[in-house]
Length: 499
Ligand code: AHR
Image 1 (cartoon, rainbow, N blue to C red):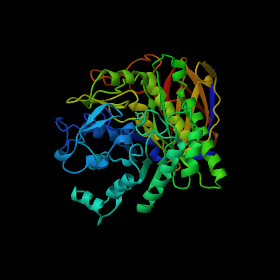
Image 2: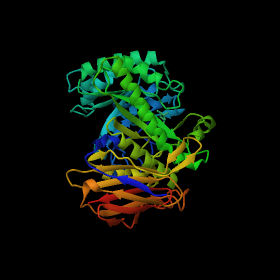
Image 3: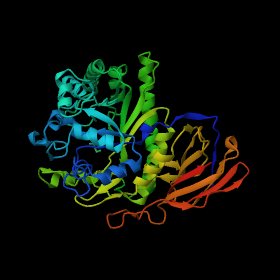
Image 4: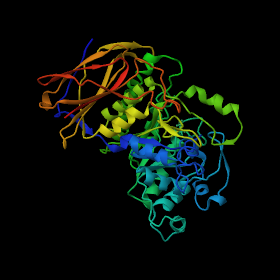
């Protein structure tokens, strides 16, 4: 039961885009309020931005952050969140049954993004609003000055345009839960018209059309086909969203979640390419995988039903186990392996809400288990993703049938010459892995870091025990000529570095 991986830098998929390490901040629960923004917190800066969360965001290595939703954006009036804070209206947020104070809005987000050293990715409301409001927001954000809305931004203190490059044309409008839910025809027309108008204001922006909110949606693939018939020429990306729910306890299937993501990506690519063929388009569309994660989703409705309208409730505050961290690491491996067609990816979300970072309001911030594979992948996945054909034993799952025990991706950094291999052992037994580095003779193993869930699969990090689940150093492999033999512990995510 050994696995084999042959690595040759002659066979490449494409460069590992930094935008694959994106995250997401939605006005949802305590993601914004009590997460990134908490004016009364002892560690907050004068604007109320939590410095501990800023520091962890930078450590996480996040590149792009999508904002302000999510389901929230489909009922949002962006103007509510700018100007003097005391004048901002309190509103009902229908998506999350929450009172939105609007104490945090676009200008605060842009200040936060600069401090966090991340690229902003804005979403416009195409649920309850349309072309005009999207254009207004873009004018406020990106137009240099001399017009009503750009001058308003300047009056609010931002003299220079924000220059936001990435824009989502709404959110999950295929979902019946979405405020302003639409058919593919309705959404396709609206998205195309909005895109056309937005590009007249700022032709340098990149636009994302909404794909399906999950591979399991009844309209999946036909939604993408119809929407792209309308929007192909105007947009640069089609979105994909996916969440994997561990609640049913089927760990073998959960560990194979990346198999589903992999097929999902291939199906969206096939659908987009089909539309391109019909429209005689040679430009290939990319995927913006702008929501993905493990999410104990089945708990949410009860949470919403139980309470009335409140501000910043504790919502979707999942505690992630060591197994969940291995799954997250594997989802990142999958995104990287599709680096030729996935151009942006955002883990949902950043703080408190299904997030790698947790905080206590008034208290500390800590790293959840899933923080670690993300931070290490963002740090070491540099250079070019290599095309590999791993050979692996298989195991049976209820949800996805027979799947490989090993999942892996290899990257070659031409500048430094270094090779990095990320590998997941989905099986409960140790997996011997034989690496053949024939195309990169002379490299030696320098590090084997592993997040091992096999010994304590349900372990979680908490405020009291924030470092219970962390990666640990393992002996590097044994070298024999161009071959290197390593052991991947049962249920583990591994980082193997060669220099
Ligand atoms: O990330 C949580 C929610 O999941 C988002 O608001 C929505 O877009 C998706 O359904």
